[in-house]
Length: 120
Image 1 (tube, one colour):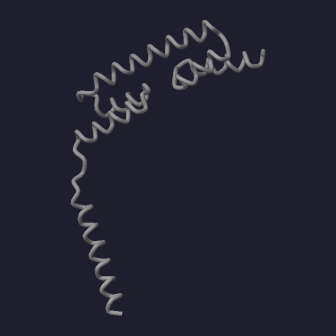
Image 2 (image 1 turned 135 degrees about the vertical axis):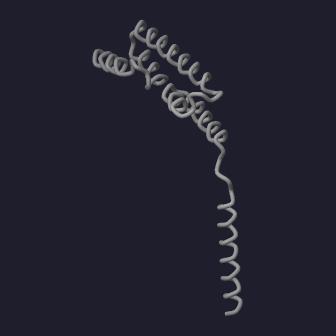
Image 3 (image 1 turned 45 degrees about the vertical axis):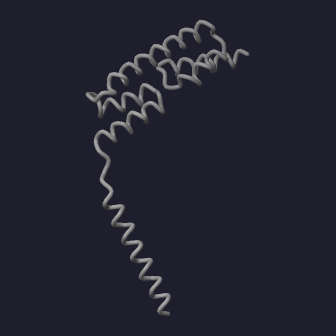
């Protein structure tokens, strides 16, 4: 019984030590939070992700890169839409949608793809 009580005391002491260590960890710095937000935007790589980053960090060093990436992505989307509508096949619209489901022409692409499927 003394052994079981000793084990219980050691387990409680270890739990308290772990809790104290966790509480002693400082919160992330603003720079660390910004870096994490930037990495998240880059991983998602969509205009919405970069705009979300810019809502909080519009004056930080990566803000200009975020704005430039939004412009690049939107330009790529516009060119892909132009090509898809020029080719005007179900496959072209499916390709557009697989890359730019977030695009402003996604609804039109889906409607045209469905219309072409019905015609086939």
